[in-house]
Amino acid sequence: MSHEPLMLEGKPVVAEIYANLSSRIEALTAQGITPCLATILVGDDPASATYVRMKGNACKKLGMESRRIHLPADTTTKQLIDTIAKLNQDTAVHGILLQHPVPAQIDERAAFDAIDSAKDVDGVTSLGFGRMSYNVPAYASCTPEAILSVLDHYQIDIEGKHAVVIGRSAILGKPVSFLLLNRNATVTICHSKTKDLAEHVGHADIVVAAVGRPKFVQGSWLKPGAVVLDAGYNEGNIGDADFESCLDKVKAITPVPGGIGPVTIAKLLQHTVEAAEASV
Image 1: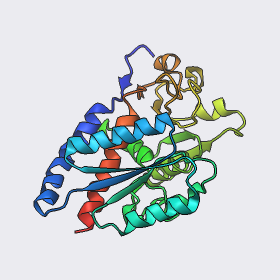
Image 2 (image 1 turned 180 degrees about the horizontal axis):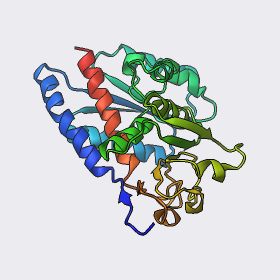
Image 3 (image 1 turned 45 degrees about the vertical axis):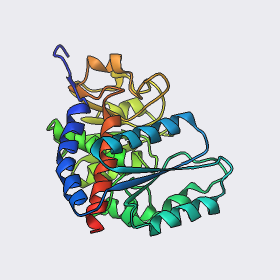
């Protein structure tokens, strides 16, 4: 395509979300309530530690409280669930985020499901996922919701469009598929066992790359005028789509970094503020 593709930058989407949150946080503070996000990090994974720090910094900027809980790498499932139970009971904590992934000895699903659904601001509980998929009120997973926020901000139609989601993880591929379905897209979910993947992608109006493999989605797979939402983040600031080869084909594409990532954090803070408002 000869025209310049639209860059779906996250920055203006974040600015819009934060502008909306500022007055709401002020209103809560006037009532003596400071929205508080508790983050739990188990072990010493440097990437996870960076993500937790970024979330804490974002809270600070908005005048929210960030409580960091750092547990040793040899923590058991029971010890983690006990920690979560204390945060569930703490009325000063409005949102709980368990940083993924956790060490191998922990039953991650049991830990996620121990989070009180009223404080499940990252949309990780089975109950939250079920409610979200039925299109009833729940905190959706933040990255999937960030993807929809980007589409909405740039006024990219979802209804009636064919969306192909590459990836089926419980916190990204599956929830984003349901969110798109609930907005009347026709959704195809592809994964590592999908045959003729390129052919499926070639039919898509909207492609969500959520596979966790650098430069995986090739421009040659895309139909002209497709919209690519790259939710991947790999070593060296590289997304799941081969950005350069996609540019000639796409109508619009998210950059990595600076696309979906910052909006994900903004959605997490939005959910925490909503949880604080609901606690009044």
